[in-house]
Length: 63
Image 1: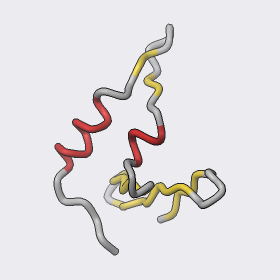
Image 2: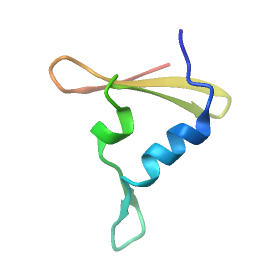
Image 3: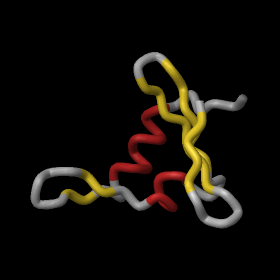
Image 4: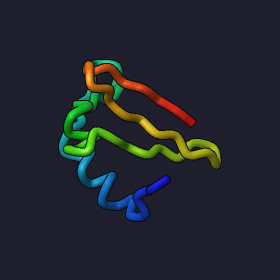
């Protein structure tokens, strides 16, 4: 499985897409977050997850 190695690139790409609600929770645009490939890898508690869009526009998160 190909995984991005430059987390700074991913973070900087997401930085311009966030906004905050009144309670301080960030909202991100999925198209900007996932990029043209429609895939994003997320590291969480030592595990890597893959977030991707389907051909029907749904989101799938897999381990």
